[in-house]
Length: 103
Length: 457
Image (tube, rainbow over all chains, first blue to last red; front, side, top):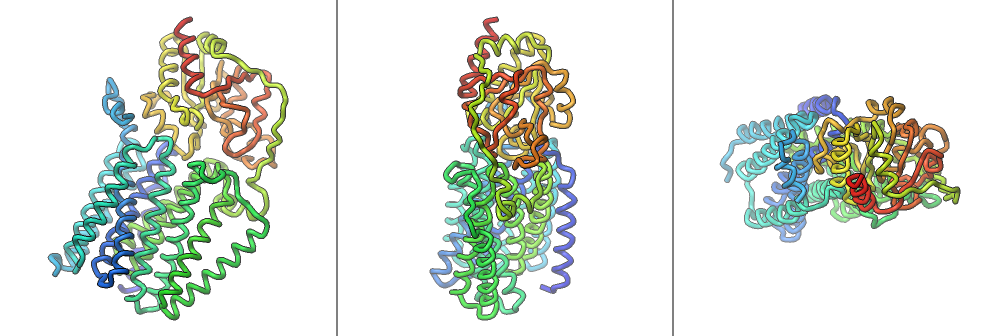
């Protein structure tokens, strides 16, 4: 990858990252942290790429461990965030939705 | 063979990156938060499908099994874990993500030629390992497996300096020789650095450290993207790194702390140690019936919920108590300190779970001026967030942290398990104030008795 292009992408991503969360209220800090946590679980595609190229069984084993860890980060992160956010849903008359969540 | 051309792969990754940006944006507002999270998950799914179609991937059955195993471990835990243990879980997922990034980079060391790529390998491994072991220590502290008090030993700063130097040397050797042995040494050093970085942090500051380590993992993922030449990883990792940094600063300022003070305070000597001279001064204790009378005939009650309420699983009982009092014409609001619970916003989640209407939750700035017109402030399982030491004693570890001014209310009632100081380990003067009464016992138990007494009135 061309280093200057890479740098451009990184710098722009930094500004976007600063910008999108700059006005969040403290109420949403926890879900936002958890959501960002899920997003870096995308390291899974790195782990898949590496595992897909490993021919040596030992290296493959390590790569598969990375796949398991990354999947846990990605899947767990999104599920846990969704569970938190379910509770911010507008109140339904009998709180049907939230009742489920407590089970 | 690959089904997708590099152009299509790049375009699909771009779509995934946009999904992540929209996810973070959506998560910044209560109305769009849930949809934002789903958009993020959709982007992640798209990216995973794309990677299978884009490159030559061997061992597909083994990889699919590994993905199934990872999902089978994570999904049930995420669904079942108690809301009170949410911070530990987030820290755990963050740690394994950092670990995965470190492993990916280490495996790519053999195929990276340019010294710059090797520098990226070293960076990813080091930061990923720090995030992994640091998160492990935060989980231990939050779960009570490790003491939540700052763990400091003499010469810590010296040891830390030495180990950072060792990391630089090992990193240099990895770049110069590319030898796997040095890579393993580097990984171990990274693990030690992570543990040493988090052990000295006091309990109350742990949430901020989780957020910081989250940003670290983002950076590690971004660097791993440079290593394997994947732009999506670079963009997603950088996004998380940047937004995580902002979030960490926002959390720290909500607690009136500086990030560097939290991390390095213990190195400078005793800033988070806290003086806990457990005194045996007299306090005024009360019983559930008296408190019930007090609440029932008040005009305005402010409830200050804390972690103790969540631990006792008392949020449903307190919601019921609030509804009952409101039916009797008492004005009841909940005052939420920004860091009530274990993480900012944690208490909002817990009360929302118990169906407390969003409108009765008040943020600190809004509720503080109203304490003067409040008859009873009911503090349930909270301590540090109402401790006037944050305002009055400059030597205190929590000095400067914004607090809820419950002392301005006409009467203060504390529901506590014991006289033990809070998470930060500091004595609370307010407990000895003449207008304060204390009701000892399990929060849920006390609340249930109070509810019964109110109903009987």
